[in-house]
Image (cartoon, rainbow, N blue to C red; front, side, top):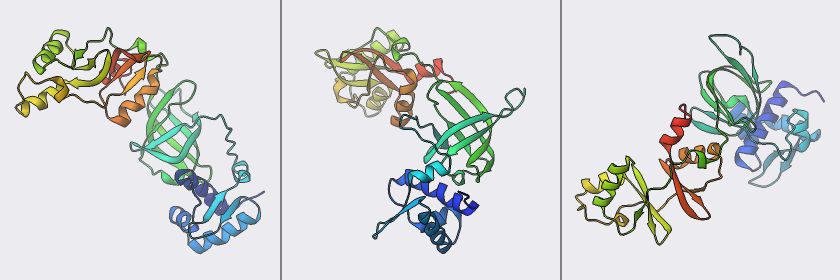
Length: 292
């Protein structure tokens, strides 16, 4: 069927908002995004409903939802096993929008590398000059960073000038962790902790009690303790962090990169069979993958 430009615009915006909020979408919300009169949107919605591309949900919390035919009409063939390739705008993930295709247009140019980014979702959520990050992609774990210099809202695509392209290492974190693990008993003092850090040139260590992980103490914790005039005879349990992120040693490195960013942490404890065997720090990742 032949859809008008405004109908395509409304439909792709509906799909984007629907994936963002996981609920029916009101015509006024669509009108705000596409900058159209709400009455115009409602009239077009009735036409789209008539041809089976949207369903209307009654009630005060009602609105519209896209049908399976809508995805097919827009060539958004999303299979059950497809992997969502996220896209971030100025450091924030754009919900409801994913990348479906990346076409490099100037890959061989020695000075520039442009690409066309095709989206599942609306290009209206992006502006010229936005700094974007795409990925990682499912197979090669490719991450692309660049700046938007153009967009085609009729085709839901962005034109970007790439600044970085990197492929995340796929090896398990056991290959990057520091081991054997330097640990502290829960009875250790701050003085003993400082000695351990200086001797081994480390900035953090897990606290163990009867073979079980109880917490982690870092140089920052010690610095705060000293600033608060705590004596060096203070037990580490008084200043350690008990919320420790533990990750199995067979986890792929690219899988933990996001955890570091989301949790804003500097280190994780690597475990095997429930027992700590190593530590992976943000610095370890930077050494492997400098652009992170």
